[in-house]
Picture 1 (cartoon, rainbow, N blue to C red):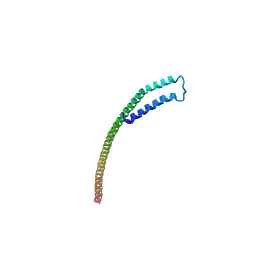
Picture 2 (picture 1 turned 90 degrees about the vertical axis):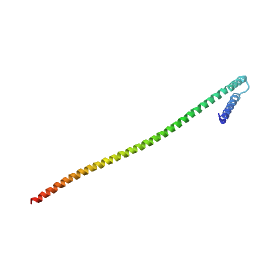
Picture 3 (picture 1 turned 180 degrees about the vertical axis):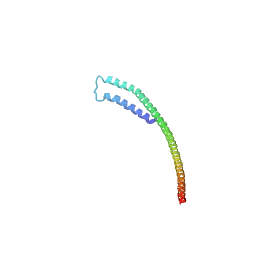
Picture 4 (picture 1 turned 45 degrees about the horizontal axis):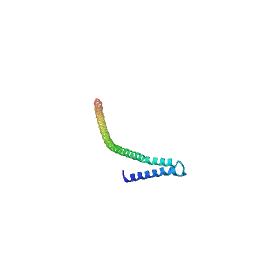
Length: 142
């Protein structure tokens, strides 16, 4: 236990002792109950070490709980950092997958446009050839 805690504990003990003796005596006149009152005060004074021990135990228990809470906090902060790193990696992976999907869609769209253009050119070629043949046949008949 450090000095400040020890000095606080001593002050508390002295205050409790002074209050235990002064309160029953304050405002009373001398009477036959004085001896029993004095006996009660002495009895309370004897119980002070036990109360001080209980306070020490409670203080130590609170310190232990505080240490456990600090360790839990540190552990949670470490887990939080690990989860943040995992989240960053997963976000990066999702972005890469989205870019790959977009590239695949662009490639498929390009291929589709190429196929449509090739089919249109082939159809146009055949139509042009038919039109030329039809025009040549017509001009040859006359």
